[in-house]
Image (cartoon, rainbow, N blue to C red; front, side, top):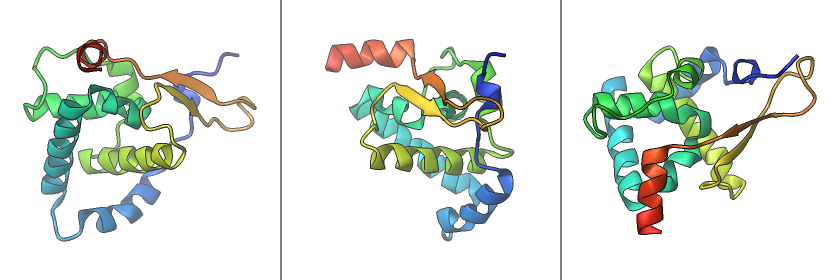
Length: 145
C-alpha cells in the first residue's frame, strides 16, 4: 500500500490548543492570525522561497493570505493538501505551521523544498516525502535570486 499525505503524523488539536495561549500572548486569535499573515507576507516579499519553510502547511496558509488580501484572489491553492494540513481554526493552523517552521530552522532546512514527514510505524518505516512547489513564488525567486 502506498503511503499518502493523509498518513503523515500531524500535531493533535489538544496539543496545539495547549500551545496557543503562549503564542497569543495578550492578543485575540484574529489579531494573532492577522499579525502572522502580515509578517509572512513581508517575508515572502523579501524572499519568495520563504513559503517552503512551512512545508505542507503552505496551501492552508496561502488560502488565508488570499482571504486577507496579501496574495491575488486568483492564486492557485492545492486544496487537497490544504484540507489535510488545516487546523480546526486558523489560529491552530498558524501554531502548527510555526512549530513546523521552527523545527526546519533548527535543522538548517528553512528554504529547502524537500520535506520528510513522519508517518506511523505501522504504515511505513520511512517518512513520506513532500515537495514544496509554488509556481508563482518560484518564478519570483528566479527573478530576484
